[in-house]
Length: 286
Image 1 (cartoon, rainbow, N blue to C red):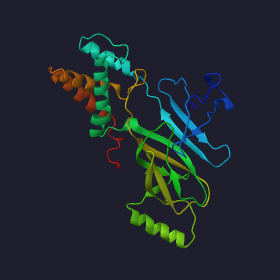
Image 2 (cartoon, rainbow, N blue to C red):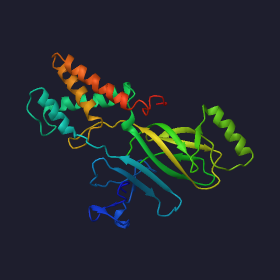
Image 3 (cartoon, rainbow, N blue to C red):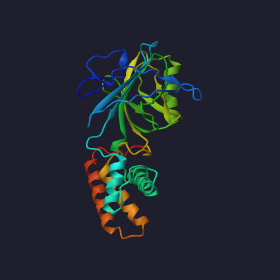
């Protein structure tokens, strides 16, 4: 669903529609090699700067629901546009595919900025994902697996329907002590504590205590892992910073003076740090 227009994507009509119908549903298929992991693919036309909610439900279990809110960044350049902009700065021919070596070098430098340099500066805003999922009566363990996310790096918060937070236990002993107390008295209630019991396929398995006495919708915000850019048509997050950094790295790789480019990169990086100063996730455990 497009959160800003309340329209739904119709897979059959290949268009946004007013009414939710079965044509807006996508059937997920369980992996043969990874039981419990379900996948599916759909192609929709996002609006520039849109916010979308992707909902997963179980046709048999009416209580199961998981929503993921995804932001489609506005004014974003594609990988090809950034590569071409860097080639223009270096007075080089424009690439149209990733088959030529120079385009591959530029893309590698773009990924270095995205995967290495931005995390080093604790710039994580573009990796935040929000959503919700249901937890059911007397069941303590849940996989937190937002749609379209390969790996969850850290959790910002878990929140109950009454807008209060489920607190992360400071260590396993603290959690186990609380859980043993609730279990000994057979107490089921709204969960007060959680821990990451383990990780599976890139996602945290959350354990709650006390185990829920009913169905609750838990809201969350997590930090996902950066995903390497591999195609020319995908959009580049924080494209000004990544373009400036990749230009600097490319020029340095040619053994040319890149001092001006380094200054430009530092300026765009400083702007990104300032803009995100009150929302970056550098103070969270990664």
